Length: 228
Image 1: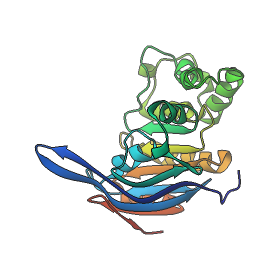
Image 2: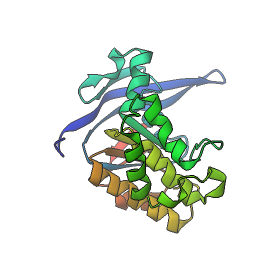
Image 3: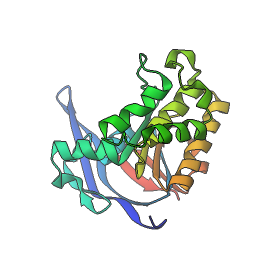
Image 4: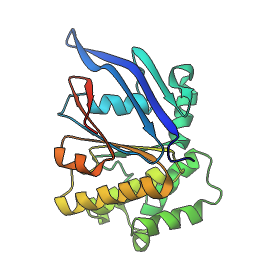
């Protein structure tokens, strides 16, 4: 994939919610474009719209207005089944609380998205490569409870990368980690963008993380402003 190929585009996207009889603005006329290999940082306070934006890009939420295209395909033109398939095969998610299944080993957690995406063929080699990539090949048979927070997040990144997605959406991935492990996770995700050509969008409330992105935005009250 060409490093400059536009893969994610939002045009005048609006999203609101109802809470306690009041209308809450999640996204207010948001437009942006991202290319393959971008490491984009989305910074803003809690409730500012970061998670809503990631959810709309990932097809978990539908905007009230506007258009979202992924590699030229309109999300609004997809039904629920097609959006689910898109998430399983083309979009990886990394969360603040890891979301690893506690009854599965590290290997099995990484294997799960391959099974769901019908990409199990060749999966054994893929899992080994990813475990080596995140430096946890020796913990393949461990369970999440036996790992540190930093190790669990590295497993979560390996899991997200398993189906070879073109986009990686990360919601506060360093929020539960100390500064040393947080920096290691950021470096790993930046390296993944470079090595795999994935478009990474990382949401954070920490302004210091913005220095890691080649594209940066601030979002407050659902309004997006570019800083780089």
